[in-house]
Image 1 (tube, rainbow, N blue to C red):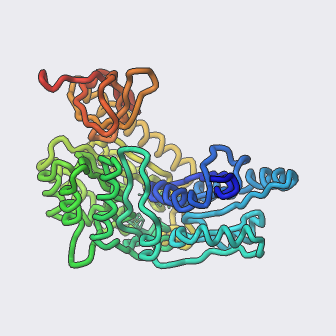
Image 2: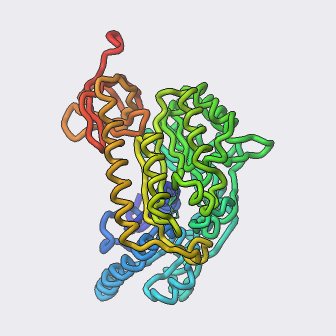
Image 3: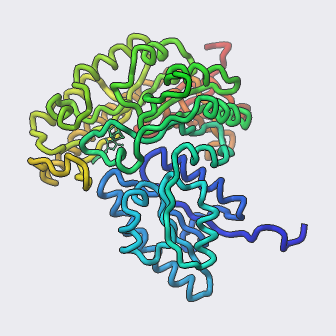
Length: 450
Ligand code: 5AD
Ligand code: SF4
C-alpha cells in the first residue's frame, strides 16, 4: 500500500474527568475516531485533537475544565505559530449543561459535544477542520447514540458496558437529571449482543454502567435481574458487576440474585449519601437509614462475603453536627470496604443550592477529614482481613517484575502475585499474603492443596 493511501496519522489527546460513564464514553470516542487516523498521545501539546470529557457533578470538577482550557490555549497558540492546528473539543456533562457559556468564555474551543452526540464526532470534527467557523453541539436521542457507536474493541479482560443513562430521581443536590436527562434503558437484545461480542474478544469481567443501573427496564418487561441472568448465561462472561445503583431499586429479586448467581461478584457500590433521616429526606433520597441498613442485612444474609462501597456527601445544607454524627454511626455499623466522600457543592439550578443553612467550608472540610479517617481505617482493615485467604484472581496482565502477574479480586482489589504460567483472562487461586490500603499481594495457590 502506498504511503498516500493511508489516512494521515493524527494525534488525539483525551482527558477524562468524573465517573465511569465518562471513562466508557472516552473509550468509545477513541474507537469512533481511530478509523480517521487518530492515534492516542499522552501529551496535549502534541495533539491535533484534544477532547476534554468533562464532569459537572461538583463545582470543583467544572472549574477544572476552565483552567485546563486556559492551559490548552497556550499550546494552541504555540502550535498555530508553527503552522500546526489544534482542535479543542469539550465533551461530557459540562458541555451539555453550559455549552453556550463555554463558547462565550473560551473562544479557543472549537467544538462542544453533549453526551448524546459522540457518534457524530467524525462529521463534526471534519466540519470544524474545514474552517467553516461553525462551533456547535448537536443533541440526539440516547437510542441513536447507542446504536451508532461501534462495540468497543477491548484491550483487556475487563470492560464496561453501558446499559442505561439518565436519571428521574431528582436528588435535590444533583445535576444529573438535568444534564443527562430522563432514564433511558437500552433494548435487551442490544446489550446481550454487545456482551457476547466482548466475551468473544476475550473479556471475562463486565461492569454494567448506568446512572441508575438497577432501574434498568428492557423491552418486553425485562427487568435488571432478568438482564443479569441472561448475561450470566453467556459463555466466557465469568464475572458481572454493576454501578451505580439506587437503594430504592434494590428489589427482592435482585437481592436474592446476589445469593444465587455465582457470576455476580460479592461487591456492591450502593450510595447512601447520609446516615441522618432528616438529611436523607431533604436530599429527596426517598428512603431512610433503616431502609438502607435493612438492604445490607438482607444482602449479607444471602451472600455473607459481600463487601460494600458507597458515596457520602458531608455538609448538605442544614446538616448539624449531630446529623453528621449519624453518618459516622452509619459507617461504624455497616462497615464499608471502600467509599467516595464529597463536600456538598451547590450546583446552580438544583433545589439544595437555594436551601437555607449552607454549611461553612471549614465545617465541611473538618467533617470530611473525620469521615475519611474512619473510612480509610475500614478500607485497610478490609484489605488486611484478606491475608491468609485464597481468592480467585482474574489475571489482567503482567506485573512490573518478570514472572509477576497482576489481577483483580472479587472485591475489585488489585492483586500482584508471582506466577509464570498464568495467562491473561484466566482465573487462578491466589493466597493473599500482604495488604495495603490500595492493593493486595500473594502467591499462586495450587488447587490440589486448596
Ligand atoms: N455535591 C457533592 N457531591 C455530589 N454528588 C452528586 N452531586 C453532588 C453535589 N452537588 C456525589 C454523590 C453521588 C456522587 C456521584 O457524587 O455522592 O453519589
Ligand atoms: Fe443524581 Fe440522585 Fe439520580 Fe444519583 S439518583 S444520578 S444522585 S439524582
